[in-house]
Length: 335
Image (cartoon, rainbow, N blue to C red):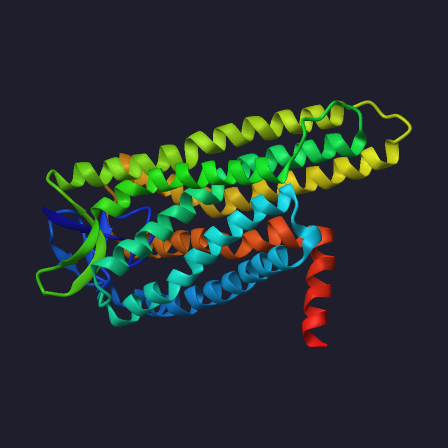
């Protein structure tokens, strides 16, 4: 069994190259290694600062969401239960970023196989949970609007139902991540430099491509198409509602959910579409590992990382109720 390292040295992997070890050398599947071009030195050195910023902002934002949701009684709503689960997934991912940063700076994986498996599992867990928690959140927002307008019979929304839904999503995502845990491990290259990555049997490149397709289909194509259909139907039904005596409330609800839907789509597409499109390119073409390709790979991977620090602002801080609870909670702590 040979190892196919992550590329670049990150726990989600890079979309373009076949593999790259944490020592900063590229692996094209034939185990021949070349050093990054000199012009990439500045970009390579900048990555720890970028990751540190994402870690600080993401950990702070997600911790605030978790703390306020659990502390303030009125925040224990159906919507916030779903938001809380997403914040936990993003928070766990940002907790693993210091390990990624350390491996990047040390140019090796010094933390052992158990921690390697854990970091890779959490990274892939966040990839899947980020989009799979959008489905129940989107349905919940739609039901909120219908309940606000009182123009339709709305299925009852309960905390118990939200908790069961969240548990089902967590179980489903955990099952999806299990293959990555099974193949994760620490390996050494020809220079005996340890790296954390996916360890595939022969034919190695075929397994690597299969893993890319697996993430692309289950982590992007299927959920994105489902969410797109849901959002189109949501907006169509919402704007088709007839105005009545509650026209003002209806108009406010329409604007609120429309803004949220557009924000969800925009941020999700911005962070994840380049990553998955690059994976398609890597699967269908044999890109030369030029300075430009490597640079784009770093940028795209960093952009996908940024989703973990943007989610708290998108799903929670745009909520007026959360903003009020956030201010009151930390005002009491500062008093």
